[in-house]
Image (tube, rainbow, N blue to C red):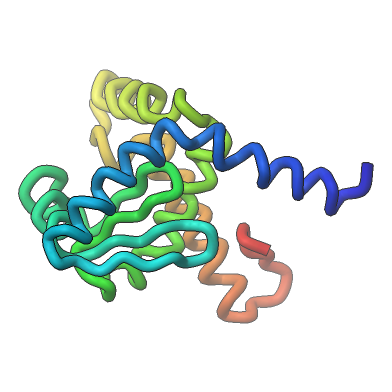
Length: 151
């Protein structure tokens, strides 16, 4: 089987595998839309900002953006733009871990805290997203010998 066919199969399975988490995100999309926020498609994801997403992220989560499967919630469109590379790394993680992502994420936070580390900054999934974000930025800057994740 050729490399492009393998990639196509992998991509076709990524959506249903991540869907339990995406379903949670779709609730956020619906509430954001109903509360006057913006919703748009972007490279295989739905991005929602303003309205409910802004309220939820500021009051409940304390973040500028958050990913649930193939849904990215952001406080504002600018926050989505700034956080896009990091959040798309989380989309990749959801595609790999599927319905096990959220339990694994919380377990990684718990493990970091048990080791005296920060539950968020030292979470393995966050560290991986930061590495992917740095790699993508380096690739966009045209540095020789650096290949970004999203190629």
